[in-house]
Length: 181
Image 1 (tube, helix red, strand yellow):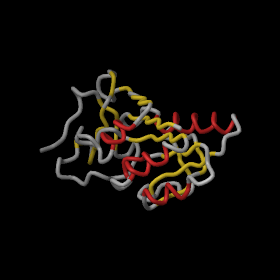
Image 2: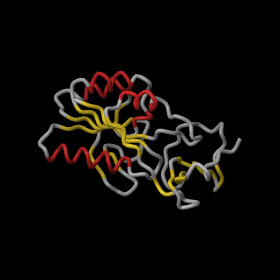
Image 3: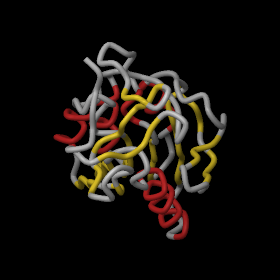
Image 4: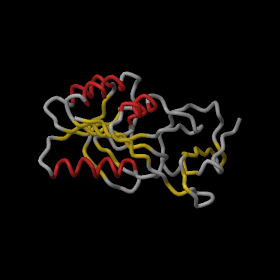
């Protein structure tokens, strides 16, 4: 019974690590389930990493649905947990008292600010794995996700949630990360 949280910027391998941990639980004979928020409309029925790793998953509209999915399971994995409603914090607290919860998500939004429920989830975590990527500009350690619109940094007033991959985002170090005012 625990809560493991995997965080980092886009392209840091969060989903790969989540899939790896769930596969290890499968290999141990544990009863597993994987979920993602229904806001992530890409690849319905799957968690898919940017490297191409895949795992069957259920798309859930709310945190309450996660509690239902967890019934009879030993391990529940959640990808893109930052996109769930604030009730996800209490759902994880409840589940982690009964089983192992492994979740992955962006700790910072494209502005470099804490993303939704992530600070509260980080406080709950028994294990916090912080991953990094390689900065697309300098080659340094990237801790930020740079959203680009026509090759330029997104404006600060842009919507926080915009699902996308390499066509919209690149990893950046703090020095090279920018947001248009």
